[in-house]
Amino acid sequence: MTALFEKIAFTHYATKNLERAVEFYRDVLGLKLLLRTDEWAEFDIGGQRFAVHQLKSSETFQTVNPAVVSLQAQPIENAIEALKNKGVRFVQELQIRPHGKMATFQDWDGNLLGLYEPPGEKSHQNV
Image 1 (cartoon, rainbow, N blue to C red):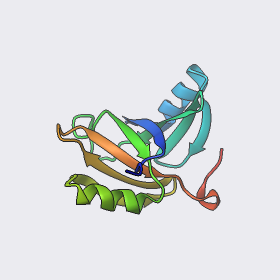
Image 2: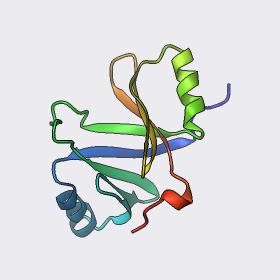
Image 3: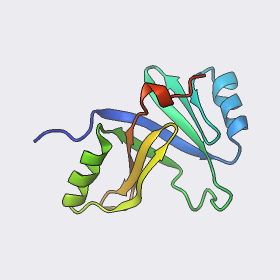
């Protein structure tokens, strides 16, 4: 069987204040900021990516999963199709964002997992 995933792409947390979170992870913890958009920031931790994303106004920490492991899959569409064919339930269909393509699914216990395909070099907003 061919693996659907290349590696763990990143782990991410939600934040109420993205600017404050960026300052904490970059300035207090000393993590290298790799990517920043209005709603997303990614940092390097020893070659692994850690991200924070801005909560939407309608979201609270009780309505979003506090941390999600996202698996890198290229092309993401093939992984989505393969997982759906195996009965996996997606709670967030494919979204195309400046920081990449994403989809979210659940394991059999309801834990959230993400799929992620990095953006092309043209769409990266490097810091």
